[in-house]
Length: 233
Image: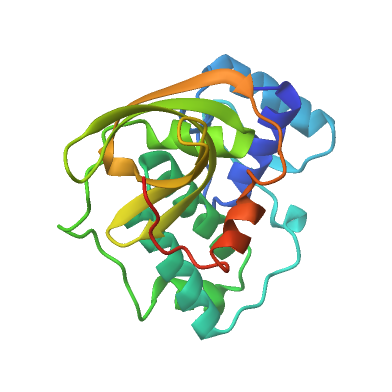
């Protein structure tokens, strides 16, 4: 991680805290050493970021540094917290962690009364027994979609037939209780949707593909009139 990115993350993390956090807690969150935290905090203070506290005691960001409070109505808060809980229930662990952090960032800058409303959500999403287990690295697959990495998979269809595919991963679609990977399949020379739980082996290459006419997500959406109905895999 670049140092500039790390310093930004430390400030963003402190924004979500209402009480002082120790250097050890920051180090665990950032996955860096405690000494690095101490150096980064010292540099942030020197640059004018109003961080209160010291090593061995804990750190807290001055409330004067926070952005102007966000304003949401109760229904909007319910939608945000419910959405985050659904991500926690149905996404991978990295995505679940990001969802929790996003809600923490929002509630940290809300006025006290709205923060209480966010914590008293009227709707909840819990884990379901119908959740289909995924054996591959789902977070890595998400990154491959975002970074446009060529991917090679071993896939088992509903009849139990196995096949090797080289694909351009275009997007992930959740249709409860399964995740689908929409892709351009080089093996079949056409768009395909793969159930992620039926991918038994995932190899993400370092090579990146570029958009080509007829093989993009926009092309797929136009072909299906923007509706993700099942197509052959």
